Picture 1 (tube, rainbow, N blue to C red):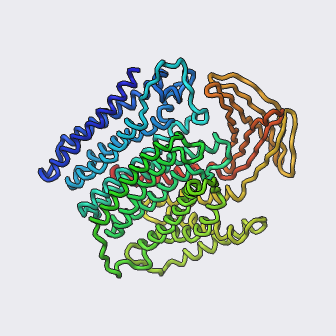
Picture 2 (picture 1 turned 30 degrees about the vertical axis):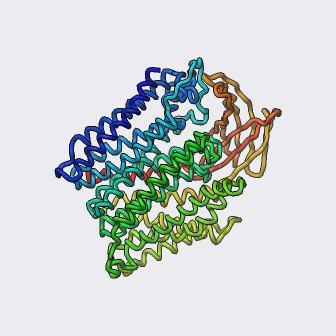
Length: 623
């Protein structure tokens, strides 16, 4: 109980510390040229108090303090220590406390890392960011406290959902939140810079680092969540357009577009309106993701809370922040008066701008597909789900020109480019289409669309490989990120087109055979683990004279009493062999799902390469 008490009062004092931060910021705004050290000191005190509060919750979980309602609802004394610790943020209240930790950490790091910039800009950024921090303090203390007490103290907790007891998911939320909360610094910074008319090349060079930090962590967070869903949920794929997957993808799309706009702003001092709007949109989408997941509105395996009243506060708070940002934008932003001749049709800027429009279109499709079922439910009480076919039909046709422009854009020069000596671009495109044609010639699928789509992906792939050998090494980060993206698109396309699946019901000792596979259910072994009972099946899979042994598993957890299906996956260089089993109620049979998924490993590798490009860009000038 002592840790929970310490955590609660640390939150209270952390909120109180916002007052002197506001006071000294306002006093210091018009006075000395140097930013008052008291602002930095109180920001550190605020960070320290929030960390103490978070550690109080961590120790409450570690020592199984079931007088704490959050611990009681999300932990159990038999849970392994690692999952007791990760259970701190594996719930509604704890995850938002982690949000607050990162919010206070990032504003302190911003103050330390922005000493060479305009003092008024630094102070205004702190003030805008403190509004966000105060909102989270009030929400945690008033509406969603992680330190509520239960009397009398229960002897045992309810336990953590077993599908959340996984190493990848344990580190997924902190990394994802570093991406989400990084957008809050961008948001506060752009509002401060807009107010002071400070958006310039120097500002772009400074804020680009925060964009890269947020983008890299968000990319890695999405990757970890995708890997977890792949092997833990038994879906047999890397992405299913689940609503909570989508709410992490939307800020990533906006952030990627923002990153490219920042590069243009840093080079040529144009597209400042794009930068402001995208900065606001990225933060709004990050907050919307928090609102949708935490409110219980979305029907998803990822959602934590089922309390729309909590979500109402977040939605109201978000509305206030967006309203403030729009007032700042329309009041202080001065429209760019660019000479029309300074923005040529054939230039790197134009290609980036065109791809930005494509990214905004993809973002709109995902946004509509995610929110439309919610609004339909509110208006007509009709429940629908929007699945992969919706996204594929609307995204795939526009993916083709997007990939082509993405391949051509880096080959052009800034300001104005010439098309002379670009014949190699046409030659590589023809070769790409020819390779794609040969691949799909004998396949019984949509020949034309897939040939052009995969040909466009090959085109980007070959262009990025060529850039590695012919372009200057000073742009290695862009080459790596673009190569990773081209590899990702190719891997996804081949994964979707060449995947195969077999679903059947078997009992121990039986087998199933078709033209391609033979599955033999050899035996079923039962064992008792620390907090669950395991039923592990042994299967022999024969395909083209190749035999594999796979062992999917059913786990029956004791607290809470839940049955989970654990996939067994055999990963090779070019494909995954994936099998799950589920019990059929009141039957001796088990439902067996066997899949062959090509290029799964390359999907994960390609995302790591994309992140590596961002990391190199972040540290390149500092090393």
